[in-house]
Amino acid sequence: MDVTGHTSSGGHGDPPQGPQKAASIRDVAAAAGVSYQTVSRVINGHPNVKEETRKRVDAAIQTLGFRRNATAFALASGVTRSVTVITSNTVLYGYAATLQGLEEASRAAGYALGVRVVTPEDDLDRTIAAAADTGGGVVVIGYDRIGAAALDRVPAHVPCAALVEAPAPGRTPSRPAVWADDREAARAATEHLLSLGHANVHYVAIPASTGTRRLAGPRAEGWRQALEAAGVTPPPPSGKGWDAQAGYEAGKKLARNKDVTAILCGNDDLALGVLRALHHAGRRVPEDISVIGFDDAPHSAFVTPSLTTVRMDFHGLGRAAFGLLRAQLDTDQQESAPVPAEPTLVLRESSGPREA
Picture 1 (cartoon, rainbow, N blue to C red):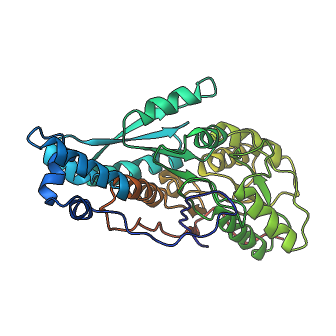
Picture 2: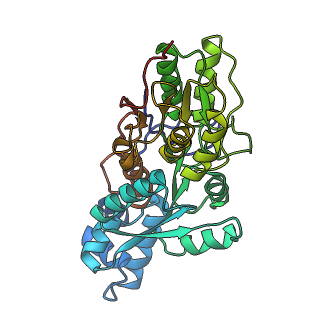
Picture 3: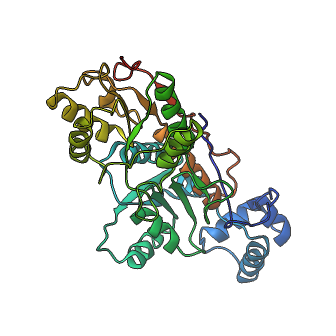
């Protein structure tokens, strides 16, 4: 399995752009014919600068497209720049762990992090405008339809980075973004179950970030691709939500079907509900039915049986997303965005060979 951190400055089909070195404060000083200390006084609003000098520096800033080093400014002025995260959820493990990674990275860089939770009833344009007014740019967690819609509404002039579901091959998001290849991870998890002798693998789906079909998300696509490559007809996916209750309801229906011997779940909360439903139905795991989750939430190693799952580096994705935004805000920043760890299939007690 691979995790791929991707960035893009334009939409699908844009020609690749070569790297360009951002203008530094010394470049501005050279262009204006002043010292870099004078440039610093101008951009920090110091009163003891001649008007003619201020105009020359401002003209050089505009010509070179210079943007102030946010970290240096915070240290010098005591003013902390802020970044706002737009998300529809702060409770589910993937969202919470992503937020933790964002917070850790922003704090280390001298930025304050704010969070705006959006709901279907919110005015997205007003919410985004309020977030942009902080002056530090926005990070959008676009794992779901609300987040994806918010990302589409961020104005082009607002510095922005996003965390998104793995896009379709050959396509990239319209804004700098990072994602994990959970399509490939789901394919590999499904292939693992098939290799254990299971004739088919049923899928309990999470909602997709685009559209309404349960086959639309990358995890569903990876599951379907693995089955079709093995000559197996994918059964209709189950699931109507993200949480353990949704998994429990789907698990009750699957438990009644004696032909079901393997289940892949779109996240670990769904898998927790499925495990409980199978227990109530008297179906043994993994002797009767193997179950694999997704994300490796902290509880997955401690349920009984412990849950085989796909480990996702949400902390790393959060840090990487902040790195993409910081590159837009802090032009003197030389460090590249960190690369998240690859998804890993973690084998535990809930999966095993099909019993005759």
